Length: 122
Image 1 (cartoon, rainbow, N blue to C red):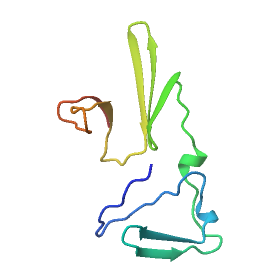
Image 2 (cartoon, helix red, strand yellow; image 1 turned 120 degrees about the horizontal axis):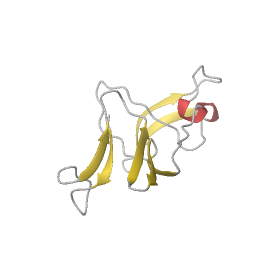
Image 3 (cartoon, rainbow, N blue to C red; image 1 turned 90 degrees about the vertical axis):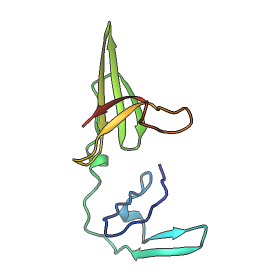
Image 4 (cartoon, rainbow, N blue to C red; image 1 turned 180 degrees about the vertical axis):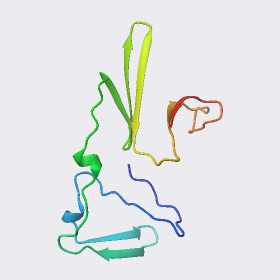
């Protein structure tokens, strides 16, 4: 999922490389506005940088439930139906002060929590 960058001020910004691309595959990185043809910043990546691998790649999550749906790159919901019982598992990468939620939006044309039917976990 590629999301547009917003304005950042005195914040740490974490960028994730797409697909199987790693820091070892690139020579430089630039944040560039295609519409205005403006370079917001660039860095040259040194040869053999001393960085740890992404834990998502080396410790994949395996659900014990038979049904699984990837709702977002960092969020999946798994479930199992056994008679009248439904077991749901939410798995995601979120900060300590964040939550996971999924459900039906409260509006037919946009994402809206007000008036929605959701399951929330934290």
